[in-house]
Amino acid sequence: MERTALVTGAGKGIGKSIALRLAADGFHVILVSRTKERLEEVAGEISGGNGKSAYFTCDVSKQENVEEMISALMQTVAKIDVLVNCAGRSGGGKTAAMDDGLWHDIINTNLNSVYYVTKAVLKKGNMDSGSAIINIASTGGKQGVAFGAAYSASKAGVIAFSKALGKELAKTGITVNAVCPGFVESEMAQKVREANSKLLNIPVEDVKKKFENLIPIGRYIEPDEVAGMVSYLASDKARGITIQALNVCGGLGNY
Image (cartoon, rainbow, N blue to C red; front, side, top):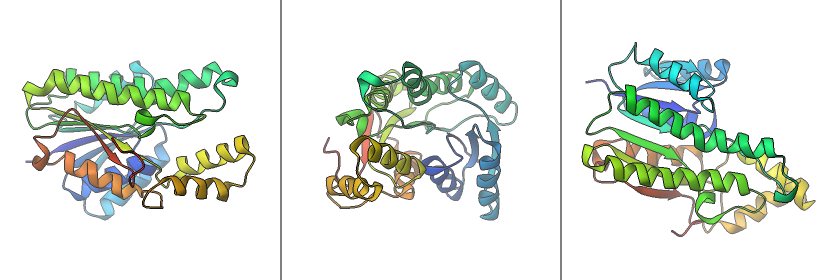
């Protein structure tokens, strides 16, 4: 029987890698992003690998948009077996000088969107025993990131939300976990390096070396490595794993 996976933030980076991996695993993957062109590109890659997908453009930081998108989706599929909340953004700076609008946008994009999408899927997505909710958080949500108060707070919220919801749903057979990447090579990582370069007044390459020196294995994680963890949590082999926040970070986080 065909299984359906919904992936937000599927247009690039970690979300794209997750979507491609789940398609390779045999899921019918529903791609969600704000940018139609990126979604078309990912859908084309899935089709080229003989996978199956559909896509919806949606700004998941807006609850009304999310509810409309899920209602439209459920006209085309019987149920959502796996939900991966991966939409997110970086951003920060010195807290005392931070623009309040940036704070709210980071919280809305990284945390509130997880609540909006999860709530809509639980109400309308016909999840049942064997279904999985996988939220992409960050080691920054456990340990904090300098000049990243909003980002760290948003990801800490995702971890706490995942654990609370996991306890709430434990008896239903629906698993809920957070995956916590460390430094992952992506467009977002490059933006973070550029921002830190300006804050610290050092070259971007020196920022990268500084970060790599913090990672015990000495390198950034690749998006496909995060996708591998998601693939496992979405599989039947992970039915006994729930209420966890699992690091994929090269040893950067130690709890």
